[in-house]
Amino acid sequence: MADSGNAVAGAKLFKTRCAQCHTVEEKGPHKVGPNLYGIFGRKSGLAEGFSYTEANKSKGVEWNEQTLFDYLENPKKYIPGTKMAFAGFKKEKDRADVVAYLKESTA
Image (cartoon, rainbow, N blue to C red; front, side, top):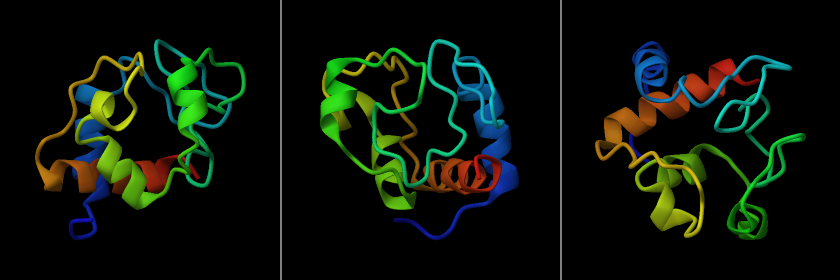
């Protein structure tokens, strides 16, 4: 993974590129995408109450800094068959920043 990210910059990216589909607060609602609270250490496709594709459920990846960093580059390539429409963050710094923000805001 790239150098550790900047959570403040990640918060701005999340707000403009992710928040329309995801929430991060504890007991936050699912939107088009699942609530991300508690994502670190959780396996893909297991946020309670969200309807995942079979691809997400069967991938079985455990989310951590590295797997999220890799996933956020190109979600459809990382989990073929996902319904996540986001094309990804191509810049390593952007991905590192978003991962740093998620690490702070979802625990």
